[in-house]
Image 1 (cartoon, helix red, strand yellow):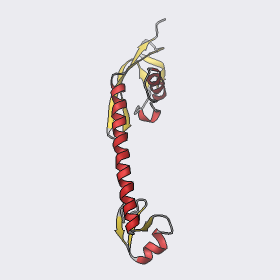
Image 2 (cartoon, helix red, strand yellow; image 1 turned 30 degrees about the vertical axis):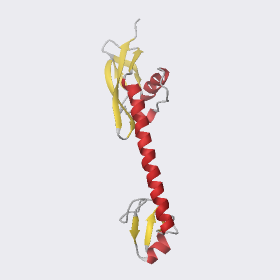
Image 3 (cartoon, rainbow, N blue to C red; image 1 turned 180 degrees about the horizontal axis):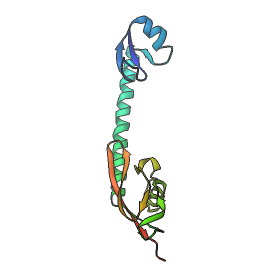
Image 4 (tube, one colour; image 1 turned 90 degrees about the vertical axis):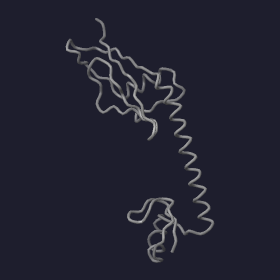
Length: 151
């Protein structure tokens, strides 16, 4: 029995793949659990159209991420924080702070916190390269500078 998988199935295949299975496995498990549907001509045409639409969507998402990256690539963020004499901050600069400052800088889109790949908050004075990932294939760094507050 030929089936088209709706989602990934361990030891069988990935979503959108056409697989050959025993009739009982298909009728009694895969189809009732919504994991697959019959590979008729109509369904084969539909899956091809869905795959083409998904490819186009991926391509558009990639191009949009590249456009956004070009805006952020020029960006340099500066924070003024209270610090001790040893250069350690009394607080810290977090991913949320970076997102807020970047969004205030006049971007034509809203940067999301999950895009900022900051493992630990910045707790010292100086410049740090912070990675930003807008798309699985679009990653770059923004310079974040932390200066001491006067006074």
